Image (cartoon, rainbow, N blue to C red):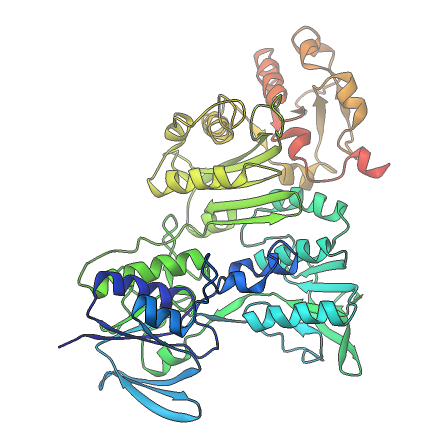
Length: 565
C-alpha cells in the first residue's frame, strides 16, 4: 500500500521535505497544504527588493530559468500534489487525519506520516493606533508588496523601523539607499542585540550614525500618532519621531496552535518539541523550520532560531527519516550575518550573555586588522571577537564586524566550533594564503593566539566596554604608544591622565613615565599590537600593574577627540 505523507505548510521546510522525499521515493503520495497563496519563495531577499538590488519580485518565487514555483510546477516537475488556500484547522492523531478548509468547504485528509512546517508569524505591537495605515510587518510577500506600493504612491520621505535585528537593519540600509530619512527604534541598548556583544555593536553603530541613519537605542515604543487614519509618528518613552511609514520588526512567534490543540508537546521556547530525528512527541508527526525547537550545539539550550537555512536542513532530514533512515539533526550554532551599508556583521556560537547563561567560565579578546594584506587593493577593516573556555581553550563563539571578510571568518568558525576546536587548533588551521585573499596569519588565527596569551596571562587585555565603564573614576595612566603623528591625528576623548610615548622610546625612557606608586598603566596603539609589546616591555622593566586596551583605536567604539571637533 502506498504511503501517504501530508505536509502542512509550504515555503522552506514543507517544500524541501516534499522535494527530497520525492527524489528518495518515487511511489510515496505527497500532499502539501499551504494556507497562503504562494508555495515557495525566498523571503530572506525581501529587503534587497526594497533597496533596489533585486529588480523584480518574481525572482523570489520563480526558478533561475524563470519558471514560477507554483502548483503546476510541483505537480509536473516534482510529482507533488501541492495546494494553496488550504487552511488546516485540526489534527486528529488517533484517526491520523487532518481537517482543512479550501474555498470555504471543510474537508478531511488521512495521513500515514504528517509533517508540520507551519512557520512563524510577526509579533504585533498592541499599542495605541497600531492599526493605522502605513504601519506594516515585513515577513510575507504581501507585506513587502504593500510597502513597495506605498513607497511609490505616497511620496514617503520619513520611515521608522521598530526593531534593530536582522530585518530592521537590512531595511534601514534599503530605505537609506532610496534616499529616505530613516530611523530605527530599539528597546535594547544596541543594534543586532541577539548577535553582538555591546562593544562590537557599538563599533558598528558609529558608521551607521555617520551615514545619517538615526538610531534610538534603549528606547521603548509606546504608541503611534495618526491623522485621518494614517500614521504620522512613532511615540517612544522619550520622544515622538515623525513617520509616514513604519515597519514593525520586533520579532516573530512560532505557529504552534495546531500542534498544541492536537496535544503535541511544546518545548521551553514555545516551539514544538522535537527529538534528534525531528519527530514530535507523536512518532508519526515530524516538525521543522520556524515552528520547531532547536538545540544549541555549544550551550545545549533549547533555542528559537527562525532561519531559512535551518528550515531547509530540517526538510532534508525529515524526508530522509520518513524513508526509514535514522538521520540525526545535531542542532544549530545560531549563526548569522548581516550587511549594513558598507559594513558587515556576523557571529556564530555563544556570545558573552549566552556563554554565561550556559555556565561556561570563559575569556574573550577583541582583535582588529585587515581582511587581507594591507598593501593589497581592496583591503578592508575587520574586527574579530573570540570567546574560549577557560581551562580547555575550547572555542565557544566568535563575532566579527568590518567592511570586508566577515562571512569567510564566521564560516570558518562554524566548522571549527562544530568539530570542537580549541584555540591551539584554530591557531594552526592551514588557511589559504595569498596577498589578494589573506595575510600569512589569518585574523582568526591571530585572535586565537592573542586569546591563548590572555588565558596564559602573558597578555593582560582590557575590553573596550570595560574601560569605558571605569575610565572616568579609576586611577590609571594611559600610555599611547603610537607615533607622534598618529597621536596628533586622533585619540580617545576624556582620558584623565594620558601621555604619548612611541613604542620605540618605551624601552629606553619608560622610567620617565609619570606613574604613581601602585597606579595602573594602560597601554594602547592602533590595533593593540604595539600596545601589547609595550605592556610586555613595561612588565619586564619592573612595572607591576600593566595592561593594554584590546583593539586599540581601531576597535574603540566610543568618543574620540576627532568626534568632538
